[in-house]
Image (tube, rainbow, N blue to C red; front, side, top):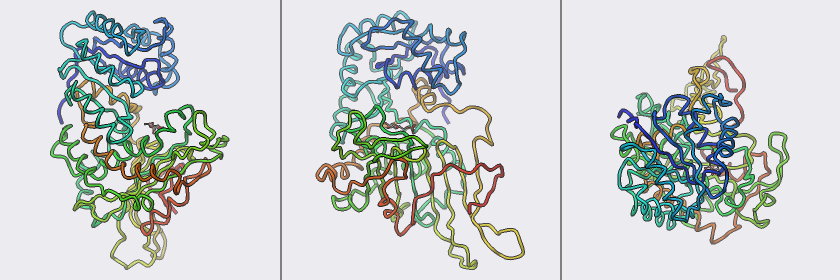
Length: 505
Ligand code: BG6
C-alpha cells in the first residue's frame, strides 16, 4: 500500500460556504481532522459565498454546525479558537472576477512555497463551469497535481450532460486533479469491503456464479425529501442514489481483484463491472425495475405528508422516491446471478445492507436444511458483517436452525469512527484518488441508468407504484426477486443480544 503523502501546507477553499453541506459536513469534518492532528501544521480555509456576513458571525455559524453535527460532540473553546482563526470568509459572487482576485491575493499571502490547494465545489451544478473557468483564468488552479478540485454530485443529469461537464473539466484540469466525491465510498464499512474481500482468501473461491445465488443491495432512508423538494423533484431516486451510491456499492461487491491497492487499478476493476452490466430494452425496464412514490404515513411515530404535498414538489409529480432494480453482470464470474438494488425515502428506518445469498447445499442429508448461507454486510447505522449458517440445536436429536456469526465494530473497536467526509477530505489533501470516481466510471454509471430514464420519460406515470411512508416500499418490489427469494432481506433493527452467535429464528 502506498504511504500517504502528508502535505506541509494546505490552502482549502470552499465555494458554497453558507450551504448546508459546508455547515453539516465539511467544516465538522475539517474540524475533526484538525482535532486528531491530520491537517498540516500550516493550513487555511477560505470560505466563499454570495451573502454578506461578518467573519465572526460566519465562524459562529460554523461552530453551531460543529456543535450539532460533529461526531466528536461540542467543540472545546481552545481547540475551536485554534481552528477558527484559520477560517476566513470571503463574500463574493462566483461569476465576478473580483471574487477570484481577492481569493488569489489571500492564498498568495498565506502560501510560502508550494503547498496543496484544494477547491471544493459545494455549489449548485450551474456554477461548476464558471468557477472552473475563473480558477484557471486567475491561475488559482494551474496544471499542477498540487492543485485539486473537488466536485460534488450530481455530475450531470444524464449521460449527455455528464459528458459535457466532464469535457469541460478535463479541458481545464488533468484527471489527477479532479476528485469526484461519492461520500458512500468514504464510509468506514464500504472501505472495509475491499479488505474483507481481498485480504481474506476464504471467500475468494466462492465469489462467483457457482456459489452465489443472488446479491441484494439495500439503502433505506428514514428521512423524507424534507426541504430538498426543489432539487429532488427534478432528480428522483434513480439519479440521486442508484446512479452513484448503489452502483458504486455494486462495483465493490462485484469487481475482480485489482492488480494493486492503487487508485488506477481499483478504478479500472470497478469500471469493468459497470461496462458489463446488461442494458435493458424499454420493455425490460418495466419488468426489471420498480419505481415507487411515498404517500402519507407514519415514520417512527411521526406523521409524514405524501411526497406530492412536500414543499416545492409538483402535486402531480411522477418523480420516484423508491427504486428497486434487477441487474445482471454479463461476465464469466457473474453470468446469470441477479443483483437486486433498492433504495427509498420515508422508510421505517435508516439501514444500508448488502446481503450475499449463497446457493443451497447440494448435500440433502438433513431434512430441515433449507436455509441458504448468507453473508450480511451492514454499512449503517450498524457496522457489522454476519454469516448465517445452519447449526445443530443442542439436544438429543439432529435438528437444524440457522444462526448468525457476527463481527460488530462496537465489540471490536473502541475508537470513534471517522465520518466519510473526513476520510475523503484527507484523501484529497494526500492526493489519493482511490475512493473517488474517475470520469469514465461516472459515464459508465450513467450508461447503465439511461435506458431506465428514457423508458420512464417516455411513459411518465406507467407503473408508478405508491407506498405509504413508513413501509418498505411497494409490494411489486418483492415480485422482482422471484424465483430467488420471496421477500427482501429484513432491515429491521437487530435485537439487542450480547452473545456473538445467536439463533435467527
Ligand atoms: C445523498 C443524496 O447523496 O445521499 C440524499 O442526495 C441522501 O438524498 C443521502 O439522503 C444519503 O446519504 P447517507 O450518508 O445519509 O446515507
